[in-house]
Image 1 (spheres, helix red, strand yellow):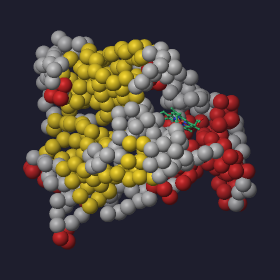
Image 2 (tube, protein in one colour):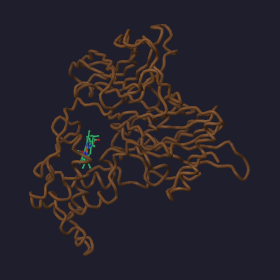
Image 3 (cartoon, rainbow, N blue to C red):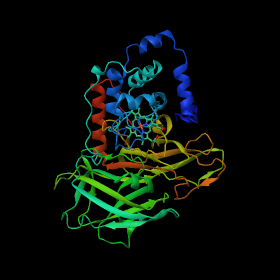
Image 4 (cartoon, rainbow, N blue to C red):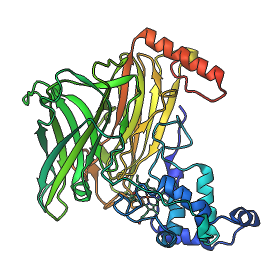
Length: 450
Ligand code: HEC
């Protein structure tokens, strides 16, 4: 097994980002760096990068804490911007770039070149340059826009969260889909979100399920649809797959809210885009919490703890998405596959590792040509790290012992995986297709399961 030590990246832990960034910008630069930085200006080089990668969130009404629409707005933040992009904390995309699959459908990270340009620009004193070089201002649709495109149906729930009190857990049902369509429909894309800033503050997570027989007594039979948690991005299924939504379903929202000091009417929305009516995708897709920790979590104050979870694949499978899940102490998670072969062909493979920041429940949607192909009998092994030391910015008090539990201040360890099962014929055909792809191009394609 190839291993990686997440704690080499000490730079991820920042107690005083300003001082480090300031130090970087005050350090005298080697000549090559000065040459490199020469001519880089905000108007010509930096604004296009911010427009493409940051302004979606960093604008008035965006979800980022400050706006980056003009030079005046950006300049005071230059050192912190440098720190955040060099350490790959912004844009939020925490996949470990040194290990595993790197092609995703929703990759929002900067290229190495873009990081270098921003860093050199800050080192050069963040010059504005000539405003005539500015690209046209980027226009944004209102912040109510869905990242899956205009949904065919939107389901909404409301819940009144009191100002103070313990964490709240429970189920609420919506009848918004009753009578909407008479046959089962396959979901092409789906997104849940808290509808506004106030709701975002109180909704810890919200899971939605289709309850097809309107049978509230047997919730364990409900079909899981999608999960929402802070910073959650949209789930994108491969074109030839879909999640089946039975007709006339009530939609159950399993919620976890936490009071934040002001009474809040939390609004949660679920947007669904369907495949066309009558369309039967080749694969029926699933999404579940998998590879739960083997033993109860035991995370003493001041310590770093690792835990392991496993899941067995009974059928040939394509994994379409990976989304780590931990709470505030989580720092890093890896998904490894242990293939069902022995002797000289025995093989394990780390397919993805991601740094963890509780603000960002990012789902990593694998590009179709590299999505892990898993032969029946494979065991997925999930490795999670929890950092209960004071250097973890997500840690409220490093003196506290922390263990399993559902509250925000407890810990969890599992991954959301999206996947579909394949027959032997489908599996072999896909393996062949990927081999041909690899022959055609020199690019490296994941060949898992050989
Ligand atoms: C998907 C939305 C999103 C994108 C895209 C994004 N940001 Fe952010 N940014 C946030 C949010 C939300 C926060 C506050 C929470 C956090 O720090 O995780 C933040 C925090 C920051 C901070 C730190 C603010 C502080 O006071 O600690 C900086 C600096 C920053 N972003 C810069 C950038 C830059 C530069 C880009 C583009 C290269 C970018 N961000 C892209 C949403 C985003």
